[in-house]
Image (cartoon, rainbow, N blue to C red; front, side, top):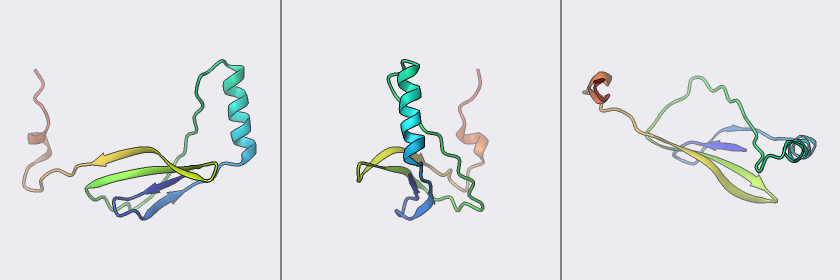
Length: 89
């Protein structure tokens, strides 16, 4: 699994062993779950934030696939954050 910044540079990379993958499939089947999932924790500091998409790419059977993305939209520097939030009514 790789997390890529908007420029396509690798921010973080993680690997799961075949044993972990097999166990996850077995547990999912045993619990009658239709899907499996992996959780990855990444601590990156300082993390330069820029507008654009952070993309999570996984490699399955030697094929890279997009597993998720986060679109980062930065606020206008001249507007205070509260002016960009919807009012509570």
